[in-house]
Image (cartoon, rainbow, N blue to C red):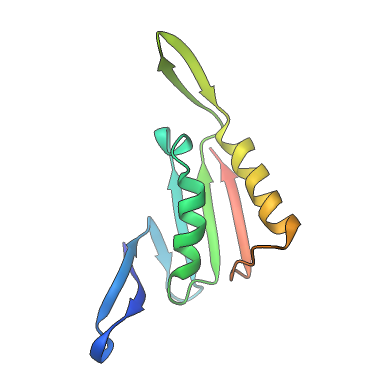
Length: 109
């Protein structure tokens, strides 16, 4: 779902981002990260992009509890939920980076 971020001349959309879902009435951005998103800093990207979306008041962010993958013939694990939770604790706990959300929900699946 395409959501506007920045407008140009005569109100035309200049920058927009794709999100998984958006609730117009409540201003909820939904982002679900699965699979390799756990390894590519997708949570950072989701936080920044969602914070720039026009009328976004809340962010609901879903990540896998754990992502298993092969590397060099070995089975590896990325602890997506734990890592995302630690990141959000650091962002909100430090107070140095202020996000514009009235609320943020992190859930694991």
